[in-house]
Length: 526
Ligand SMILES: C=Cc1c2[nH]c(c1C)Cc1[nH]c(c(CCC(=O)O)c1C)Cc1[nH]c(c(C)c1CCC(=O)O)Cc1[nH]c(c(C)c1C=C)C2
Image (cartoon, rainbow, N blue to C red; front, side, top):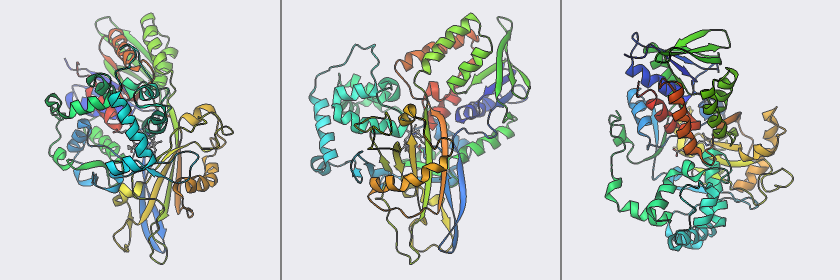
């Protein structure tokens, strides 16, 4: 028998994806689906804004992203969604050969300017970063296995220090973790945050590099990851693509999913947070009663929680947990011990040309740069003169995504605007309440000096800016994450008789692809 009424709690990407796939699998009217979202809009922190601008008397517009901005073509669930929603025509792709794919930089705290991360042998031998990478690779290659027992879950920093040395772990490891989790590499589980790294070590009998060499020559790795996904011909189109987005930004996926859910008869409730949850009915035929802040009451035969884990925890706690719920809550508790990272995202736009038509060059062509953890750490402004604002990195958006922007009668073939996004906070916010938390605009006067130190250039006044603060937006996986997720899923299955599931970034991975994949898998056993 198909489920009679499915409730989806949370309308971020995971909840939307669950609603989309469940509505295709269990069509209306046999199954009703209701999605409940606390915010007045769907999509969580995926938010794209087109801003109209005038530059040197010409009208144009620029597309700015408040959250994630690009996708990688390695997620079959994302490619499938693009195919099913017919979004191919609005794709903007960045080839693997483009500077935005090839050139990545670090700004080493305490220095001036950017250092390119080497990708070719000559720069490995000559540049300081290259020498550090080379030494790290050789160290890992020739060092015998020195791992802890197999059930010990190491931090990313401990793992990289053990295999590649402390300097590499601090410089590259902390920067990588900033760029993905906006978190402290000393707090994250290597197995959960970078499962691939952990797998390579197992293959290489302790060495990542030996594991990578083995993998490259292994036949067993050549299975088709797209098998079972309805990707149409999108996969071929993505063959030489490094990253992609859409003409109107990543929110295109959200808006199109919303239209499709409406067409499929899914009821979408916005701006009305879930306020209580209770399981009732019989042992063999449970049902789930959900009330919202506005007082609406829903009875679901099945449900999917795509709520942030701390929110789910509070909901279960305030709804008076039974004994078995209490053990699920203990696991939820331990899954939320590493607090989710908060990030302030500042979009800055400059004209790409002077009034006289000369191109402005504010940064080298490339993806952008990351700032590793300073020697002085994240502790306080006074003790971290190397990075007083807590900048984690800056993305050179117009290098990859200038096709999103428009200008009337363009002069020359280059992008009309230089747009970049500065990412601030993460682990820096853990130690200090920032003076601009109440008024984000206060941050702006401090940025030009910081950015000119990073990029070694005086920045003109931006013609447009946006500041967004995302509180607790990325849940980083702490020590023991994977086993706790397994434990939580087992508890949930027993507790809710297989009719309630927990998905979302806190249990299934933080990338857009992970969220969409998690939603796709929801309710597969119903
Ligand atoms: C808005 C800030 C975000 C930071 N991390 C994430 C967001 C949305 C999440 C994230 N970023 C990346 C990944 C890996 C994606 C994958 O492997 O498929 C994830 C899960 C990589 C990444 N980092 C930056 C960009 C532009 C990307 C590509 C994906 C995207 O558009 O988000 C830059 C960057 N992100 C953050 C910082 C501090 C930063 C610095 C330059 C935090």
